[in-house]
Image (cartoon, rainbow, N blue to C red; front, side, top):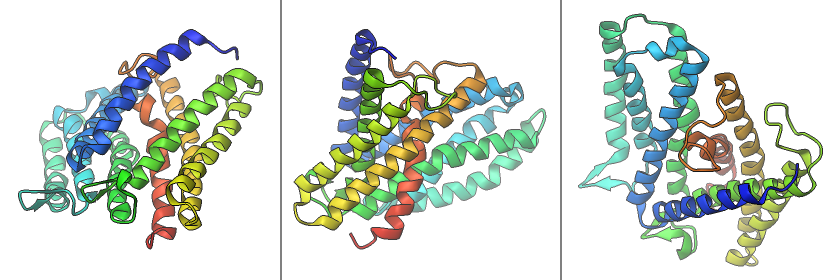
Length: 298
């Protein structure tokens, strides 16, 4: 596909705003981090419910309590996965998430029975899928802040709150997306998937290779001869780039089934919350598995 400077300019300008907000949320402190991803969590849920409602109109008929209760229940799941750094006036968000989660597990079915016009198992299934797809992913990201805490250089450590692994994942996704777009625009010829016709094999492979190379270089600049950590940077980048590509295809499939071009209008040239974070949502669980299996001592 031909390189479109107008589209690239729009995407670049809105990406700068996006990067500014993300950097603020990531690096100010643990509460800005939590607030940022809480907002993203609810934004993703609103768009997910809209898309599912267009795919299956029956989902639009869920009760008010079901619609917003499942979002709050998902947020409680995020709270549960927070680590010791998230302590508010002596109350750990982890414990708060546990008790609130138990309360919602009890209340939601009761309220649904009382207020729902029709109780359809498929609607419950859509909501459970959303909890796994959206809330669990952001929860696992919260947990990985604890894994990286205390093992990293000050640039990735905010008052003892470790954000190294989240930063690696987010940088990897951003580099992969950007490089795949540039390479695909310049030399892309072979379509990668019918789900997303603009993606090409050349762009996809080029994005992954350049992403891994960039993150390997960053790891080397930060850690020098500590090659185990440098290799971790490269492997996490590889996992994030590959899983993120399929995450993008998954969301494209969802939008196509709903008959929508974008999940929302959050950012010109980038779409909505799901458009911007679809890659991250699928990459996080796979990176989490790698981190848990191979990086507990890092």
